[in-house]
Image 1: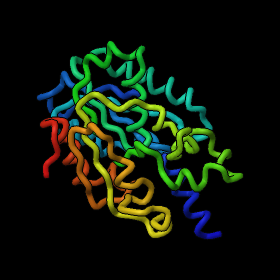
Image 2 (image 1 turned 180 degrees about the horizontal axis):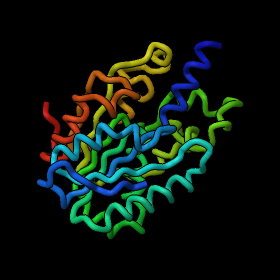
Image 3 (image 1 turned 90 degrees about the vertical axis):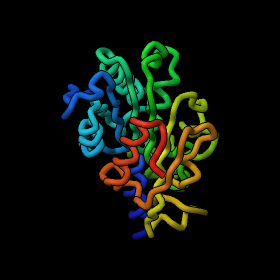
Image 4 (image 1 turned 45 degrees about the horizontal axis):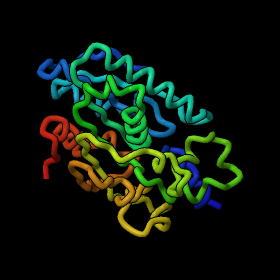
Length: 241
């Protein structure tokens, strides 16, 4: 019972656009859209925002409610905010943590957003379950799964999972995977993982670059080495290996 409750709390953790105001203005005409993960808020990505602004980019935070929400509501909210972020910038980059990476993919795949996609520069995904998560598989059909809404249940690795509905990205994409697992969830994985997402699940066939870091899933948006690699990819189109 204790293990069940612990893994449920971590499962929930898996899954407004602010005015850009960069610390320096070297890349002020390039806006980085920053999207948080499941059950979090834009505050969870403040360290990422500070990092990209210190590097000279403009930053635009996307906020959405993912618990007790429909996926349609989430996608609509993200679309509206990204559209606003894109209005007054020449180049647009994306940085998404966990579910935020999938929402970046969904936005860029939408035919209605192709004009905005013409401004696209680079995309970084941090701990994103691009092929679902066994943690979602374990809890998706339990009686309590519906309590938190349909979004967490969509992160399964089967054919019904949200990630399986998205096409393979066709843009410059850097993927960061964590390898610091959690004791209460490690038994669900067959290989390296960050506690919520396996290293294998983060990867996509045509990713531009990939790097593994010894960080846990929930710590990734606040980790110094993660932020360093995000900035390095945005500036150079590759990670620092």
